[in-house]
Image (tube, one colour):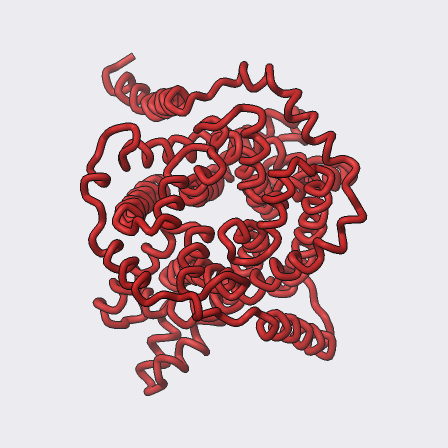
Length: 514
């Protein structure tokens, strides 16, 4: 073996070996102990058994908070998506808007993307009081940040020639954007919006923890009181809601992609129905309550955010910002890796391309069931098994990652070119080797992109898991805000912004290599 071959082999093995080293280092740092979890598994099975059967008599008290949850999700998603498609062209480099405006908007989006919906909701309660208006405001900002980034990336990847041609003919930039760009990006935009609607139902279901309305407060109350039959009923209703949204979203997505066609009169009725749902959800929102909004509190909040506690920011102790952010990153990293590893076989069992329809249906229900449970509820459940600490956060994000990654992996498998796989089967190759040689190589770039996106999401979710004692930066941040320690809160938020920015840069580098 010559010197060049040795160097190439060393480079090829350097990445997986480094990855495994980081994985085990992060697992040790977060105190992952599967043996201890296995010994205490009866706590988990007993808890699940207490939820079955659910208390069906409790359904009447669930319906109104569940409506508030759906209300915030629908209004927040629609408003956030509308503002996103209006703002995205100013952040796209190929549409020739002023560079200064593009940089300012991208910085704003990066800042907003750094905060989970729960933190945005807690901040909104200081501005608008308690209730669904604050929750809707938070969901709108959260959706706006994500949808704007996804949309300006789609615009930047699109061909700008039709837009530039219309502009050169004297058409205004707005009209050129509407007629040349929006039709091109519309399928992807609507697909992303429908996906976010489903995700926002889960986000909205925990906003009640900070007084922003919805079913979260009721859920937390019943878990705290150990009334698990009522918790089971709440989770069942959330599961049915997610199922309904999932199947309706699939139907709308098939219409958007042109896979399904309906008559014009039916299309008009569908548009009217969707418009009516949005109007009903919006006009029935609780109005903002400014009576408890203190101008002095708002001034202190702004002053604290602009003048963070630098001693806490640069502290390297176990109660300092660096340690807490490192713990948050490790929780998100381990949770994402475990979720990704488990999601790959589940995705193959979740599509009719590889398994019979009955098997696919059962796994589809299983994955929707996993996705329907809010991540903080998983934290509250796992903490009874593994105790407080970072390991609980790892378990929580691993299960949450399975739900999202399996869904996205399944969508990639459904869009796959199956001819190489079937050719190998026709040559007598067994299914598993055929998958390894024909399917996985095609999906590697897509899978990598999806996993990196989930890691980005997990960073934000890990930043609030401390609220239930699952480690990370969440508890200090929320306690600081509730105690009006705005300088410390400002330091934590600045740390989160920098962390998400660095993760975003790293993800972009890895994505370019794949």
